[in-house]
Amino acid sequence: MIDRNNNGTLAAHLSIGFVFSTSKQAHNPFRNQPLSALYLLTILEKQFGSMVDVSLIDLMEHSDKPDITAVIPEKDVYLYSVTSPESVEIFGLTGGLRRKYPGAKHIAGGPHITIDPEGSKPYFDAIVTGEGEESLIQLICDIGNKQLKPVYRQQRVPELNSYPYPLR
Image (cartoon, rainbow, N blue to C red; front, top):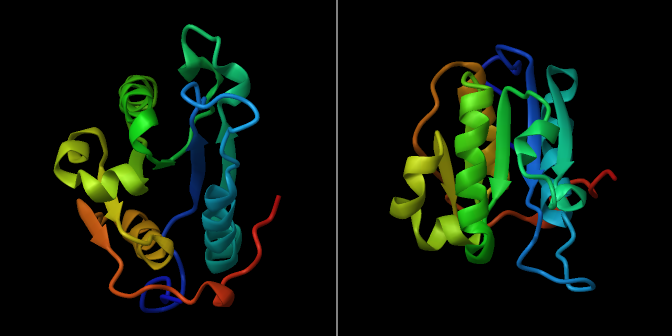
C-alpha cells in the first residue's frame, strides 16, 4: 500500500462518508449491495486508523424524501461510485450537498466516471478512473495535505487478496 505521506502520518483527521445512492433505477430484489463501498472504506480505515472516521451513507431507505440531503450528515469528504443509471441522481445530490456543506470535498469513481471522465469532472473536486483502491489512498493523503489533484488513475491492477475483508 501507499505510504500515507513521507513520514507515515496523515496531516489532518478526516471524516469520510461513502454515499450509496437510493438505487431508484433498481428494483428489489436486484438492488446492488454496497460491497465495493465497504471494501474501500475498510481499506481507508486500515490504512489511516484513527486519523479517519469512515461511514457508509446508504440512501435506499430515504428514496421517498423530497430533500434527501436532509438525512446526510456533514463530512469532510464524500465518496461516490457512479454507474450510468444513477449518474443524474448523484450529480444532483452533489449540488445539494455543496450548498449545505460548502467546505466538503466530493470524490467519484466507478464505471460511469471511467467511461465519461470529462462529462463527470464538473460535479466533483476529483475523479478516480479505473481501479481505485490505491488511488483513493493517495487521494485522501492529498486532501489531508491540501494537494488534491483533479484526476487520479491507478497505474496497476491491485492484488485484491492483499486487502482486508470488508467490515460490515
